Image (tube, rainbow, N blue to C red; front, side, top):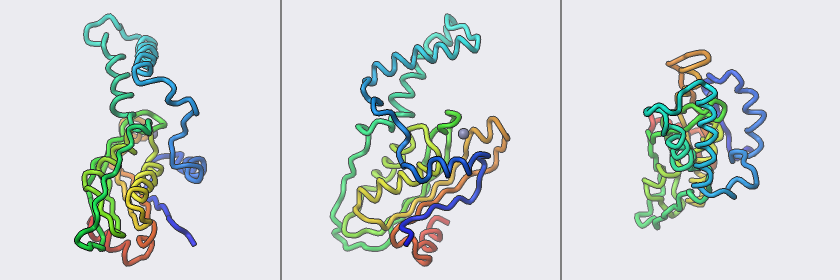
Length: 226
Ligand SMILES: [Zn+2]
């Protein structure tokens, strides 16, 4: 029996088939080396600053210019402390659970959670919305924790398919239930600002597991998110 499934409703990535075959069945984690966190954040920032200076220099930019001189440091800090901070498991949000005092055992849906990630193939933004749902088995999670889980999984170089599965996985772990659904609808800047330059398309990925594999439950969720 299939425990979970993923559906893709549109496909702006030309090499999507390759993505599925190369990543889908391997791991939900971004491929990282064993020594990924041997350097501390400050050492990483210093190293990235040096390398980013090299990129700007190679592009012919004048790094003595007042407007440009601090860019390598700024980019390095942004990478390590903000947009790629979710690579480090130390930054994983610890979910705060509450006992389900009201015996609420229906579906809980949180929709339109902001997604800001970056495509791991081009290092340009993926921007969209996540809609998540679960059916409580006795615990409920603080609503802001759902946002934090989405943000943590987004703050790393990503592909949308893995991001969707990763969010579902962490919600399942936090709540100790398989009854979880996640839909992400996102715009990929590597599709709009370069390449095919399509500004209208979005990509929808969905991960359903547990009772959400049941058509009625899935349809109720889809009805809620409109
Ligand atoms: Zn891309």
